[in-house]
Length: 297
Image (cartoon, rainbow, N blue to C red; front, side, top):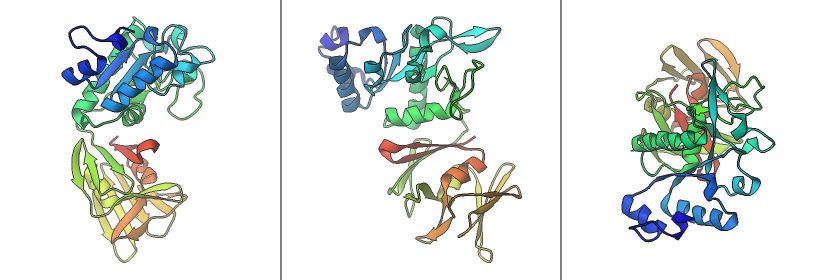
Protein backbone atom coordinates (compact mmCIF):
# COMPACT_ATOMS: atom_id res chain seq x y z
CA UNK A 1 0.00 0.00 0.00
CA UNK A 2 2.81 2.41 0.82
CA UNK A 3 4.42 2.12 -2.58
CA UNK A 4 1.02 2.40 -4.28
CA UNK A 5 0.33 5.66 -2.47
CA UNK A 6 3.74 7.04 -3.31
CA UNK A 7 7.34 7.07 -2.16
CA UNK A 8 8.49 9.79 0.19
CA UNK A 9 10.63 12.34 -1.62
CA UNK A 10 9.79 10.99 -5.08
CA UNK A 11 6.03 11.29 -5.57
CA UNK A 12 4.59 8.24 -7.30
CA UNK A 13 6.10 4.77 -7.47
CA UNK A 14 6.79 5.37 -11.14
CA UNK A 15 8.73 8.53 -10.29
CA UNK A 16 10.85 6.51 -7.85
CA UNK A 17 11.52 3.74 -10.39
CA UNK A 18 12.48 6.25 -13.07
CA UNK A 19 14.70 8.37 -10.82
CA UNK A 20 16.60 5.44 -9.31
CA UNK A 21 16.58 3.27 -12.45
CA UNK A 22 15.02 0.37 -10.54
CA UNK A 23 15.08 -2.94 -12.41
CA UNK A 24 14.42 -5.55 -9.72
CA UNK A 25 11.92 -5.58 -6.84
CA UNK A 26 11.54 -7.75 -3.76
CA UNK A 27 7.92 -7.63 -2.60
CA UNK A 28 6.42 -8.82 0.67
CA UNK A 29 3.26 -10.88 0.41
CA UNK A 30 1.80 -8.70 3.14
CA UNK A 31 1.42 -5.91 0.61
CA UNK A 32 -0.85 -7.94 -1.65
CA UNK A 33 -4.49 -6.91 -1.64
CA UNK A 34 -6.20 -8.79 -4.43
CA UNK A 35 -6.83 -7.84 -8.09
CA UNK A 36 -6.20 -4.09 -7.72
CA UNK A 37 -2.77 -4.75 -6.28
CA UNK A 38 -2.05 -7.37 -8.95
CA UNK A 39 -2.94 -4.88 -11.68
CA UNK A 40 -0.76 -2.21 -10.07
CA UNK A 41 2.31 -4.42 -9.97
CA UNK A 42 1.65 -5.85 -13.42
CA UNK A 43 1.48 -2.38 -14.96
CA UNK A 44 4.70 -1.32 -13.24
CA UNK A 45 6.46 -4.51 -14.35
CA UNK A 46 5.41 -4.27 -17.97
CA UNK A 47 6.11 -0.54 -18.32
CA UNK A 48 9.58 -0.73 -16.77
CA UNK A 49 10.63 -4.30 -17.63
CA UNK A 50 10.91 -5.04 -13.91
CA UNK A 51 11.77 -8.40 -12.39
CA UNK A 52 9.60 -8.95 -9.32
CA UNK A 53 10.22 -11.47 -6.58
CA UNK A 54 7.61 -12.06 -3.90
CA UNK A 55 7.88 -13.82 -0.58
CA UNK A 56 5.62 -16.85 -0.34
CA UNK A 57 5.00 -16.10 3.33
CA UNK A 58 4.34 -18.61 6.04
CA UNK A 59 1.41 -20.31 4.31
CA UNK A 60 2.42 -20.07 0.68
CA UNK A 61 0.79 -17.68 -1.79
CA UNK A 62 -2.97 -17.88 -2.16
CA UNK A 63 -4.56 -18.74 -5.50
CA UNK A 64 -5.42 -15.17 -6.51
CA UNK A 65 -1.87 -14.03 -5.84
CA UNK A 66 -0.25 -16.96 -7.60
CA UNK A 67 -2.48 -16.58 -10.63
CA UNK A 68 -1.62 -12.92 -11.09
CA UNK A 69 1.50 -13.90 -13.06
CA UNK A 70 3.37 -10.89 -11.78
CA UNK A 71 5.96 -12.42 -9.46
CA UNK A 72 8.64 -15.06 -9.10
CA UNK A 73 7.62 -16.61 -5.80
CA UNK A 74 10.20 -17.51 -3.19
CA UNK A 75 9.76 -20.04 -0.42
CA UNK A 76 11.81 -20.52 2.74
CA UNK A 77 14.31 -23.22 3.56
CA UNK A 78 16.40 -24.27 6.49
CA UNK A 79 19.30 -26.58 7.27
CA UNK A 80 19.11 -30.02 8.86
CA UNK A 81 22.39 -31.72 9.69
CA UNK A 82 24.14 -29.34 7.33
CA UNK A 83 21.83 -30.11 4.40
CA UNK A 84 19.36 -27.60 2.91
CA UNK A 85 15.72 -28.57 3.39
CA UNK A 86 12.43 -27.04 2.39
CA UNK A 87 10.75 -25.17 5.23
CA UNK A 88 7.31 -26.73 5.32
CA UNK A 89 5.64 -23.73 6.92
CA UNK A 90 6.34 -21.67 3.79
CA UNK A 91 6.13 -24.01 0.83
CA UNK A 92 3.96 -26.86 2.06
CA UNK A 93 0.30 -27.59 1.63
CA UNK A 94 -1.90 -27.97 -1.41
CA UNK A 95 -0.71 -24.70 -2.95
CA UNK A 96 3.01 -25.45 -2.87
CA UNK A 97 3.10 -25.55 -6.69
CA UNK A 98 3.11 -21.75 -6.73
CA UNK A 99 6.47 -21.56 -4.95
CA UNK A 100 9.27 -21.52 -7.49
CA UNK A 101 12.49 -21.07 -5.55
CA UNK A 102 14.07 -21.28 -2.13
CA UNK A 103 16.96 -19.27 -0.78
CA UNK A 104 19.56 -20.12 1.84
CA UNK A 105 19.37 -18.67 5.32
CA UNK A 106 17.67 -19.10 8.68
CA UNK A 107 15.22 -16.22 8.46
CA UNK A 108 12.67 -17.67 6.07
CA UNK A 109 11.42 -15.74 3.09
CA UNK A 110 12.36 -12.45 4.74
CA UNK A 111 15.90 -13.39 3.79
CA UNK A 112 15.51 -15.67 0.78
CA UNK A 113 13.36 -13.29 -1.27
CA UNK A 114 15.76 -10.30 -1.28
CA UNK A 115 18.65 -12.77 -1.54
CA UNK A 116 17.32 -14.04 -4.87
CA UNK A 117 16.63 -10.48 -5.98
CA UNK A 118 20.34 -9.86 -5.41
CA UNK A 119 21.22 -12.96 -7.46
CA UNK A 120 19.02 -11.61 -10.26
CA UNK A 121 20.81 -8.26 -10.07
CA UNK A 122 24.17 -9.96 -10.62
CA UNK A 123 22.76 -11.93 -13.56
CA UNK A 124 21.28 -8.81 -15.16
CA UNK A 125 24.50 -6.91 -14.57
CA UNK A 126 26.31 -9.49 -16.65
CA UNK A 127 23.75 -10.17 -19.38
CA UNK A 128 22.08 -6.78 -19.78
CA UNK A 129 19.18 -4.75 -18.45
CA UNK A 130 16.99 -5.89 -21.33
CA UNK A 131 16.77 -9.35 -19.75
CA UNK A 132 13.06 -9.85 -19.02
CA UNK A 133 11.38 -11.54 -16.09
CA UNK A 134 10.40 -14.46 -18.33
CA UNK A 135 14.01 -14.98 -19.40
CA UNK A 136 15.22 -14.57 -15.81
CA UNK A 137 12.76 -17.24 -14.66
CA UNK A 138 14.00 -19.68 -17.30
CA UNK A 139 17.64 -18.89 -16.48
CA UNK A 140 17.13 -19.38 -12.74
CA UNK A 141 15.56 -22.77 -13.41
CA UNK A 142 18.63 -23.78 -15.42
CA UNK A 143 20.98 -22.94 -12.54
CA UNK A 144 18.76 -24.12 -9.68
CA UNK A 145 19.92 -26.93 -7.44
CA UNK A 146 16.94 -28.96 -6.18
CA UNK A 147 16.49 -29.07 -2.41
CA UNK A 148 16.40 -32.63 -1.13
CA UNK A 149 13.24 -33.33 0.82
CA UNK A 150 13.19 -37.09 0.46
CA UNK A 151 10.17 -36.90 -1.81
CA UNK A 152 10.13 -37.94 -5.49
CA UNK A 153 10.53 -35.33 -8.20
CA UNK A 154 7.52 -34.70 -10.42
CA UNK A 155 9.54 -33.54 -13.41
CA UNK A 156 13.26 -33.58 -14.06
CA UNK A 157 15.07 -30.91 -12.06
CA UNK A 158 11.97 -30.07 -10.05
CA UNK A 159 11.71 -30.74 -6.34
CA UNK A 160 8.31 -31.91 -5.06
CA UNK A 161 8.11 -29.49 -2.16
CA UNK A 162 10.39 -26.57 -2.70
CA UNK A 163 9.96 -25.75 -6.36
CA UNK A 164 13.03 -25.28 -8.49
CA UNK A 165 15.45 -25.21 -5.56
CA UNK A 166 18.35 -22.86 -4.88
CA UNK A 167 19.81 -21.00 -7.88
CA UNK A 168 23.59 -21.37 -7.93
CA UNK A 169 25.45 -18.88 -10.12
CA UNK A 170 27.66 -20.58 -12.74
CA UNK A 171 31.33 -19.73 -12.95
CA UNK A 172 31.97 -16.50 -14.84
CA UNK A 173 33.68 -18.31 -17.72
CA UNK A 174 30.49 -20.23 -18.64
CA UNK A 175 29.07 -18.87 -21.88
CA UNK A 176 25.40 -17.94 -22.17
CA UNK A 177 23.81 -17.72 -25.62
CA UNK A 178 20.34 -16.40 -26.45
CA UNK A 179 18.77 -16.88 -29.87
CA UNK A 180 15.32 -15.80 -31.06
CA UNK A 181 13.14 -17.49 -33.63
CA UNK A 182 13.25 -15.63 -36.94
CA UNK A 183 15.96 -13.20 -35.83
CA UNK A 184 19.54 -13.07 -37.11
CA UNK A 185 20.83 -11.06 -34.14
CA UNK A 186 21.74 -13.11 -31.07
CA UNK A 187 23.49 -12.56 -27.75
CA UNK A 188 26.66 -14.04 -26.28
CA UNK A 189 27.00 -13.18 -22.59
CA UNK A 190 24.84 -10.12 -23.13
CA UNK A 191 26.74 -8.82 -26.17
CA UNK A 192 24.94 -8.71 -29.51
CA UNK A 193 26.30 -10.58 -32.52
CA UNK A 194 24.92 -11.30 -35.99
CA UNK A 195 24.27 -14.47 -37.99
CA UNK A 196 23.61 -14.71 -41.72
CA UNK A 197 20.47 -16.76 -41.11
CA UNK A 198 18.02 -17.28 -38.24
CA UNK A 199 16.65 -20.08 -36.03
CA UNK A 200 13.21 -21.51 -36.70
CA UNK A 201 10.81 -24.15 -35.41
CA UNK A 202 9.93 -27.27 -37.35
CA UNK A 203 8.16 -30.40 -36.12
CA UNK A 204 7.96 -28.82 -32.66
CA UNK A 205 11.74 -28.60 -32.44
CA UNK A 206 13.95 -25.50 -32.42
CA UNK A 207 16.58 -25.62 -35.14
CA UNK A 208 19.59 -23.30 -35.01
CA UNK A 209 22.58 -22.81 -37.33
CA UNK A 210 24.97 -24.96 -35.35
CA UNK A 211 28.17 -23.22 -36.45
CA UNK A 212 27.17 -19.96 -34.72
CA UNK A 213 25.83 -21.64 -31.59
CA UNK A 214 28.77 -24.00 -31.18
CA UNK A 215 31.45 -21.36 -31.69
CA UNK A 216 29.65 -19.02 -29.26
CA UNK A 217 29.85 -21.81 -26.67
CA UNK A 218 33.56 -22.35 -27.25
CA UNK A 219 33.22 -25.53 -29.32
CA UNK A 220 34.98 -26.47 -32.56
CA UNK A 221 32.95 -27.37 -35.65
CA UNK A 222 34.07 -29.35 -38.68
CA UNK A 223 32.22 -30.51 -41.79
CA UNK A 224 32.67 -33.83 -43.62
CA UNK A 225 31.37 -33.22 -47.14
CA UNK A 226 31.75 -36.85 -48.18
CA UNK A 227 29.58 -38.24 -45.38
CA UNK A 228 27.39 -35.16 -44.92
CA UNK A 229 28.43 -35.06 -41.28
CA UNK A 230 28.96 -32.20 -38.85
CA UNK A 231 31.30 -32.80 -35.93
CA UNK A 232 31.22 -30.61 -32.83
CA UNK A 233 33.98 -30.95 -30.27
CA UNK A 234 33.84 -29.39 -26.83
CA UNK A 235 36.15 -30.52 -24.08
CA UNK A 236 35.89 -34.29 -23.75
CA UNK A 237 32.67 -34.48 -25.77
CA UNK A 238 32.57 -35.20 -29.51
CA UNK A 239 29.16 -34.91 -31.14
CA UNK A 240 28.59 -36.23 -34.68
CA UNK A 241 25.35 -35.50 -36.54
CA UNK A 242 24.44 -36.55 -40.06
CA UNK A 243 22.33 -34.56 -42.50
CA UNK A 244 18.95 -36.24 -43.02
CA UNK A 245 19.51 -38.82 -40.29
CA UNK A 246 17.96 -39.05 -36.84
CA UNK A 247 20.94 -41.09 -35.66
CA UNK A 248 23.85 -39.30 -34.01
CA UNK A 249 26.96 -40.16 -32.00
CA UNK A 250 28.30 -38.82 -28.72
CA UNK A 251 31.87 -39.99 -28.10
CA UNK A 252 31.13 -42.81 -30.53
CA UNK A 253 28.01 -44.01 -28.73
CA UNK A 254 24.87 -44.07 -30.91
CA UNK A 255 21.65 -42.24 -30.04
CA UNK A 256 18.39 -41.45 -31.84
CA UNK A 257 16.60 -38.09 -32.16
CA UNK A 258 12.99 -37.55 -33.19
CA UNK A 259 14.06 -35.16 -35.99
CA UNK A 260 17.04 -34.90 -38.33
CA UNK A 261 19.50 -32.10 -39.15
CA UNK A 262 19.35 -30.52 -42.60
CA UNK A 263 20.92 -27.77 -44.68
CA UNK A 264 19.15 -24.46 -45.30
CA UNK A 265 20.57 -21.13 -46.49
CA UNK A 266 23.87 -22.96 -46.96
CA UNK A 267 24.00 -23.55 -43.21
CA UNK A 268 23.66 -26.75 -41.18
CA UNK A 269 20.66 -26.60 -38.87
CA UNK A 270 20.38 -28.99 -35.95
CA UNK A 271 17.80 -29.48 -33.18
CA UNK A 272 19.50 -27.49 -30.45
CA UNK A 273 18.03 -29.44 -27.53
CA UNK A 274 19.84 -32.62 -28.58
CA UNK A 275 23.05 -30.87 -29.61
CA UNK A 276 23.41 -28.73 -26.50
CA UNK A 277 22.63 -31.43 -23.95
CA UNK A 278 25.03 -33.79 -25.74
CA UNK A 279 27.75 -31.19 -25.07
CA UNK A 280 26.78 -30.95 -21.37
CA UNK A 281 25.07 -27.58 -21.88
CA UNK A 282 21.68 -26.61 -20.49
CA UNK A 283 18.83 -25.49 -22.71
CA UNK A 284 15.64 -23.62 -21.91
CA UNK A 285 12.81 -22.12 -23.92
CA UNK A 286 10.90 -18.87 -23.32
CA UNK A 287 7.60 -19.37 -25.12
CA UNK A 288 6.29 -15.82 -24.75
CA UNK A 289 9.44 -14.37 -26.35
CA UNK A 290 10.28 -17.22 -28.73
CA UNK A 291 13.78 -17.44 -27.27
CA UNK A 292 16.06 -20.42 -26.84
CA UNK A 293 18.57 -20.10 -23.99
CA UNK A 294 21.80 -22.12 -23.96
CA UNK A 295 24.07 -22.14 -20.92
CA UNK A 296 27.47 -23.78 -21.02
CA UNK A 297 27.75 -26.65 -18.56
